[in-house]
Image (tube, rainbow, N blue to C red):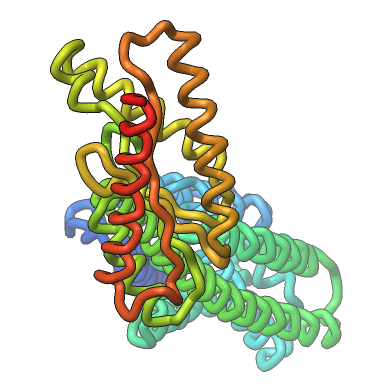
Amino acid sequence: MSTWLLTFFAAGAAYFYFNWQFLALADECFGKKTSVLRAIGVFVLNYAVFTGCSLLQLHLIANWSIFFCFLMAEIHIIYRQSWIADIYMALNGVLNGLAVNIILRCAFALFMNKPLMLFDNQTLMSENLKRYPVLLGFILAGVIFHAIRKSGTGSKIKQLAKDRSSLTFLVRLTLVLYVYLILNLLTYYTDGNDLVFKLWGIKSACFAILGFYLASFYSFRMSRLNYYADLNRKEREALLQEKQDDEKLRIIAYTDLLTGCYNRQYADDILQELWEKETPFCVCFVDLNGLKEVNDQYGHLEGDQYLITVAKTVKKYIRQQDLFFRYGGDEFLVLFMEANETVPMQRMYSINKELVEYGKKRNSHAEISISWGVAHREEASDIAKLLQMADERMYRNKQEIYKGRKN
């Protein structure tokens, strides 16, 4: 009885160390500190389950399956992570524990020249030798978890827990390795003292541990790459959003709200840019005839409608590469890119003709028409003179129109 109690408390102390190191690793992985009382509670519950399975002499496969289920449920209750993260952490605990356990049972059986069946879960048999490798296995597994913590792997697992695809891959592979190890427990229920089974057990456990850590290393790398890819995607989206916001602000800053045309500020910037690049273009000043009379007689709402109608008509006739601005109260500016004077004149005649016909159909009390003046870039030595030249020609065109009306 005293031997049994000594074994019970010695195994309990070893399991407490294993449990303590495992929870410390889980704390680091999930960023949460487990209280001392909760850690003790988990130890008491798990060791009670372990003792109960031993006393009931359950099959080793059932023993480890129950332990896995309890560990997974406890992790979920304590850390409140996703189920996939809980499964991974539980697999981390049972795979390392089971692999170390198998290695030590096989090593003890090898060096003591005893059959593996003496290291199964038949703990009530006096000749059962399970207590020695189990006790040492708990200590060694605890040392492994301690080493994992010191290596900084906890932060990698924490990052991995956020990457569902990489974590799912690792869990699936770890489950396969765990099932592979579980099936190796069948060798403890075979008769004989075969050296092959003992060496096979050691080889299988080493293979499972190596496979688990290689898969973990690969998953850590993939999760890190996915993290940087996601970070890069978010930065690109932020830059794109910033660019779109800048474009919206630019449009607001450079757009005339009434007509939807570009404003004078943008016209001056574009003219300066075209001039510096020596790009060929024609500038056309457009002025509304009789806007003041419309405002005075029919109100500014009618005057605004006049401006909007002219703007819409001009936009219909200018080409895609041309630029259209509201330059002043009743003045518009059109930049005809890479065009001689013939193109602007033809477009302006067409625009004016449509406006006059529109006014007649609308039975407008005031005539709707425009005056314009065109100047080519090569005709002036600077922008100011070019604009002055177009403005003077527009003014002469307006005078001719009013002179024609008087006659």
